[in-house]
Amino acid sequence: MHERYVREWLGAMVCAGVVEVDAKTLQYKLPPEHAAFLSRAAAADNMAVFAQWIGVFAGVEDDVIECFRKGGGVPYEKYARFHAVMREDSGQSVLSSVEPHVLPLVPGLADRFAAGIRVLDAGCGSGRMMNHLAARFPKSRFTGMDLSKEAIAFARAEAAEKALKNTEFVARDLSDFDETAPSEQFDLITTFDAIHDQGRPLRVLKGIHKALKPDGVYLMQDIKGSSHVHKNIGHPFGTFIYAASCMHCMTVSLAQGGEGLGAMWGEEKTREYLQRAGFRSTETKNLAHDIQNNWYVVRK
Image (cartoon, rainbow, N blue to C red; front, side):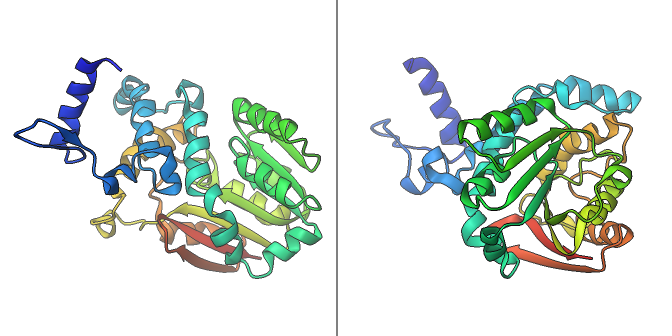
């Protein structure tokens, strides 16, 4: 690396308290407990992955400012590297905890996977979760649906690379899912931080209810927070999540002529929407290592 650039970067890191400098020797030191959060080797603890969103959001700053003046929203295609960063984000925060933490949220789910069930991931993004589970449980069949053709293309390519025969990925808008969803075909339906940025979230949830078998389970991961701003004061990620919502989640929904729920729609409204969609049983689960999300185990 070029020394002059590194030195200027180190100045920023010292002022931020990330790197330390010795005033006498002018030697720099990165404490190991700081380094543990700043590299991909840190796996799920790597905070640097989330910092990539700043660059993604900066790319649409002028567009969002224009929306402040004129309304409307910024569509997905305006976001450079969105799906690449999301793949790494979800791979780190969700994929790494599937076996030890997520599957146990639903008693007996791992055994049902092993025996063979039908699974749908609505708003699947790049399909990493479905491909991961498909490789682990070859007797089950996995379907992923997402608005983004780019994300679906990645999902299909990854499935082909892994020679998976039990996956299917469909590029489609779920805004009319309440009308077009197949009736009672899936044993498990999942969404991972995918409902709040839908154009028509209630219609998506109604479609999920329709597509779920009577004894099926809907596993929903979404942002942990309140629907009331004053109750989010002190939220450890509150500032970031509201900002990310303004710069992405809310505006991409509005770009579809949607509700623009936003990432901090909160547990109260989440439960309201689930009830309006027809669900009668909702359990809120929390994972000790995941302070950002609620995990809802939902049944008909």
